[in-house]
Length: 212
Image 1 (cartoon, rainbow, N blue to C red):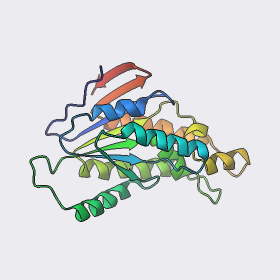
Image 2: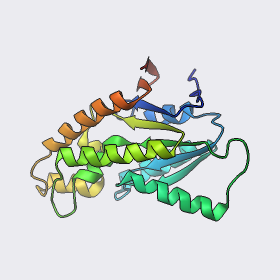
Image 3: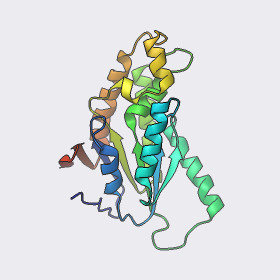
Image 4: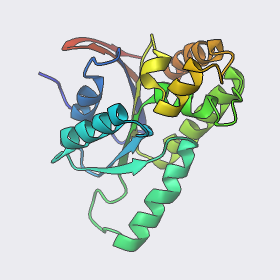
């Protein structure tokens, strides 16, 4: 049985690594079961094709009843903070004991990496620049949220995580070099391990847990 993430008074960042179709997203959501505070699901997928739209709908149904507020943010993940502040200003603040506690589930780094790297112009942003953009965004999110769960994949398959337009661009030769993606993901995953307080390696009900 999956144990919910027991969140202390200290800020925590937990990373869940899992292969594609490993159910790592559902596992990550379960880590925040019973969380006493606001929970935000930062969704990065661009639903441009039928397959992507089906995934988004499936994930939305999977989150029903779990208390997450979904924030769509496919690039520049730091901008999710502005969206949340705007939403909270409309809804007003809660003066309860847990009003200041906020958790974010960021799903997921391989998709965000692809979105940041492959531009519609055909330009491929360097792995170094993509890594810096994502890590800077995570640094700001870590300051804003009390707790963060980040989803990633140590063997990220670009053709699985990229949106329909990027896949088409790769297949049609618009993007001449895709090796930068693997470089960026290797560096990002290494950085995530260094930044995290907890690491979960999850693959279809098989779990390995590390506390750093």
